[in-house]
Image (cartoon, rainbow, N blue to C red; front, side, top):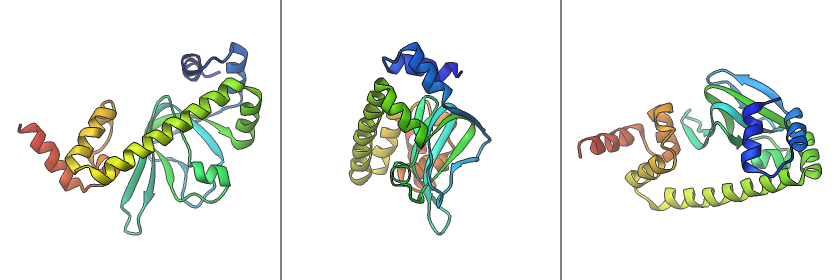
Length: 192
């Protein structure tokens, strides 16, 4: 059993104790070291992943080695490459641990079985998809229309708990700005 995950389900769903036990029993626990991957670009995403503890990032890498971070997944959040998972095609992104982490993973077959047999889990999955869609739209609009300062301010508002856990280079890669620009913005805030 996975107590933290079970508490998450009790808080976010109407699952019965038996359903929670079933969902939990079909998960595989994986312990990740810092920088260890859950998914590498070129591989097919075969699992839905729940972060029990730690912090993961979804990112793409340019030919020059620079990262473009799409999302951070702290504890009590889900992550995967949706397109690779749904289409069973090679992923164009990587998912790896920023810090030592524990994750629960369900194979696509097992998770599909759970969605069919546990309606409240399907409701949770649909809500998570909707929330992700809303957030992605908001993030895209902010990235396209906001200044670097506004993007950083938005990041601080949305993810105050992540600031101390992330290296500045990763925050800059998430915001789509250079490390130099982020350093300038932070310095300007401190001297106000």
